[in-house]
View 1 (cartoon, helix red, strand yellow):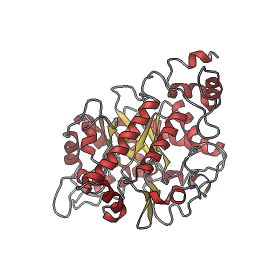
View 2 (cartoon, rainbow, N blue to C red):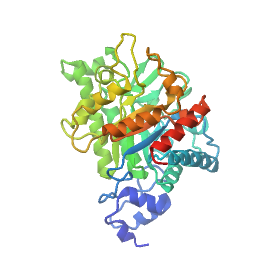
View 3 (cartoon, one colour):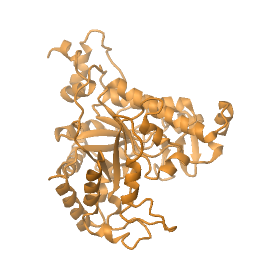
View 4 (tube, rainbow, N blue to C red):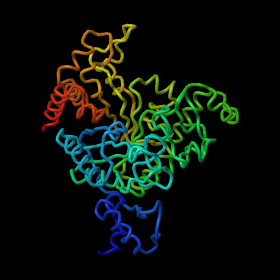
Length: 423
């Protein structure tokens, strides 16, 4: 192997895909000026260089699937072999639908489904947070996805450390709630990094940097967890010290600063990597309740800070509120999002609610449930998105299509989605 060539025009991602972790470490160790080691034990140092082709070819619609911690709860982590068999079956199903991207949750609760020097192992791997499963789930995921031609983005929840008293039931001593309690806000039974703490934000950025420098991920993905509450008490001290007068604007600035810093870390590792966010489908909630200025991100106001936005549009056709408003009906909210100004190069995808199959979306309209019993609602939405010029979609979530309480309906939806994708 010509290690000098590896130090030349080859991106971090392409190099890791080609060489694997052990080969990459050995090859880079021989590069002039390359560090002997970097990051957590067992992870190779990296050497980002010139761009390589994106995992999803330019112009091809983005067709994705979310795999969340809820899926990981049902997967066998007892051995590398068992985990590989489980994810291989999952990814085969994704490929059969005609998808090209999987968004896998790898840091759900201030923990990691990969080897990290910053976060403890996720309890999802062994049942106990902080315990090494003896293999690297993300490394296996990447190998299995890429062997099937699927892009894999690492889904990170930046702030959440605990959802409630049962999830996770116990946190490791290395969890940030113990090592940096001054960064943590308690909201109900949940624990979150306080978006007003600059040091906490910097730690999140370092966590993303660790991911993109040590794994051949094709991108990084944030969901809609930003400010965990509108309660003014969680950041009263920081706001008083800020000298600002508009708390809401200040909170939005805190979130945008994190988003922009993460974007910078991702692009510094490899300009071809993608960074995207999936906010709530209700633009008002994003702005006033979670303090995420999605419109500014779409416009790249103040400079670029993401590659795509994927609002969670989980309502069906004709969706009607108790007030009689149909603003959030699929046929109305999608055009509203598409009409928002976007900077060149910022894509707009739509999250679709596969979890509504069989149960309906809770609207006041007569077909609130029946349209989700047709076996083709998702396919109809995808066809509409294609016709309106959307850049793609992501299905939430894998377990709602494979493992559904309505297996016949889910199977019909899968067949219809595959057909609309040309499979």
